[in-house]
Amino acid sequence: MNSFGPRILIKTDGESSIGRGCVEYAYHYTHQMADIKRAACASAPIGAKIVRFTEGYRDIRRSADDHEEFHAFDITVDLENGHRADEAQLNTMAWRMKLFLGPDYGYLVHGERSGLHIHFRFKRKG
Ligand SMILES: [Zn+2]
Image (cartoon, rainbow, N blue to C red; front, side, top):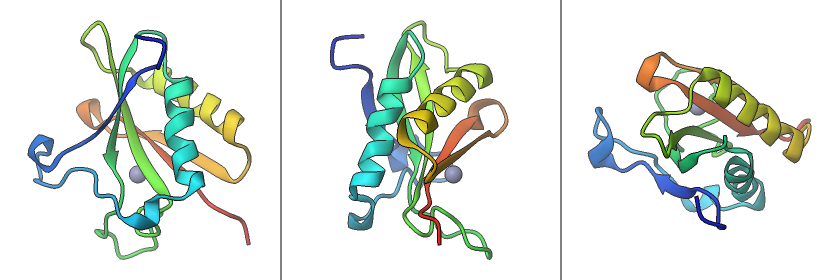
């Protein structure tokens, strides 16, 4: 890792098994969502090479969804040793991100095997 920290990559449609990578719209470009990206890089585990954003906007659920409201990103980390960050590493990373960003943010680490990711959201209260 250089002094800039890990590289940020946005998942492309071609990298996706469902043909839809990370969808971003102009509504994502708020300082709160930029802060999520910066905090992810600052909180990534030792040996992190790439912080990968795998989901932005989506509209696949009937219920209200953070992704539909432009308030969430899904995040994975590629390590320099060729592995993905594991569940423990992602939990520590997400906890650090929340500590850094404060109570208006929340997270969940979930997904099986290659689908394992941090769901990190900004949610203003009230
Ligand atoms: Zn998510």
